[in-house]
Amino acid sequence: MGNGVMTNYPTWNQFSETQLNQEVGIIDATGDDNDVTLTMSHTGGFAGLGNNGAPGAGTVVDGIVVPQESNDIYYWVDNGQTMMFEFKNLDAGTYNVSVYEGRTTDDNEIGTLWFGAVGDKSGAPNTGDFNGSSFTMEMTIADGDSVFYHSLYEGSGGLSGIIVQQVPEPATLGLLGLAGGAMFFIRRLRV
Image (cartoon, rainbow, N blue to C red):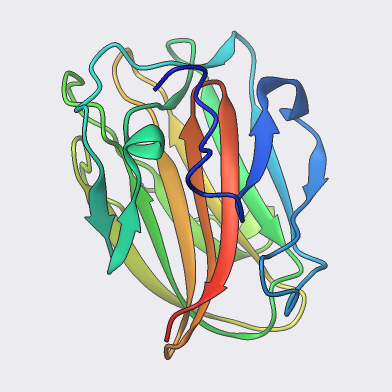
């Protein structure tokens, strides 16, 4: 919508394309876990934000209402290149980690979710195809573990967002969505 700024969601932190390949501090809305960082990286080729196959509507992912601005956009890299997101400094505990793609015109979107270190990644993708939908995985992480998402772009596919939600409720760790050339993250308590 418009310039992509999510004015109806003032507690979200905004990230731009200029912050790719940098570790960016994330401050949650409650202030409960203010040392979390996110690094969005890619190999070779251009990484961009855009979506000409936008659904034009919000969605619900793992019980979280995802606004249209986040569901309508996606992050992509050139064919044959990879993208990776790393969340660091999460508190130890159990989390539901969800990836979603709102775009409706792609052939597929598959990737790998894991926790620990970069070298702990399994060999095969584990998300299944979540084109136009989402995939959620429960993870129990220890102190010092990071949460990762990695995808190989093979001509069609991208990522609209990642939700990292601490289990059991009511603590919600985060919502990362891409919107109008920007990324957003939120932490809120669900009452």
